[in-house]
Length: 173
Image (cartoon, rainbow, N blue to C red; front, side, top):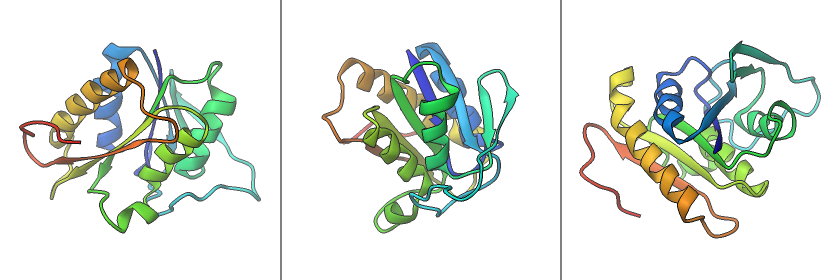
């Protein structure tokens, strides 16, 4: 399985590292993320300047654009094949209510869905954001990704997942 991972917190985010690592057992993971923090940028696209993608490590790309740009560039340029799944996150903070309209994390998952690729946006509802705080979110995201791979989502549907701080006791959809 080919999995594209992005976020809106930037290529150096601890949530991104944890998510990419958690997804490794499912297949090839390619990270295409903004080169810096791009939170609350919504579904913006870069239209009037060239995008630059710099490979930071094998299958890790930093893009000087928005999360939506990253999904577009990943699917239409950097990847040789269409990904089977896109995951966006793990976001530093929840994405609930009105936050959904501003969230670059959610917009990246929506963009993938518009391109016909199943997608999940994953956020951590916590007060602190050290790498160890994301571990349970990464585990749950990987379990959910495997489930979506086995049982595809309906067309034009993506999941917005908010993981509570600490050790979640289960999953409710």
